[in-house]
Length: 73
Length: 87
Image (cartoon, rainbow over all chains, first blue to last red; front, side):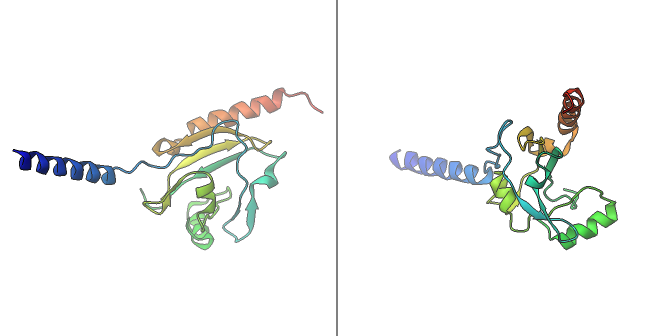
């Protein structure tokens, strides 16, 4: 009986570990409305740098992280 | 996360008119808390950032593909600008 319980405990532990690995928590941003957007400099399609802070005082910006955009995913 | 050259090719094919940026080093994706260490990719998200650099809208996950929320906030900011007294 003890052996059976021990085996069951191991199976349960493994199942929990496997479930935990199969469903990793997806990342979510720490940023919220009202926060200052972190500045960045990224490269546009012409190879020129684009800096977020260059728009400060001039235009609002829609920033879309569109991962795997051209994959149909 | 694609190279800028690769983005450029897609932009040409699709006729994209807005700046399409490459986060090749994933640095910005990480700073915005969107990098998934497991997959090596980021998650989809949209932000609306006002002229003062403050975030006015955040949407993370699969729903971020729908621009409705971002559009509404842009509309709100536009109205706010129109109502502001001219200096």
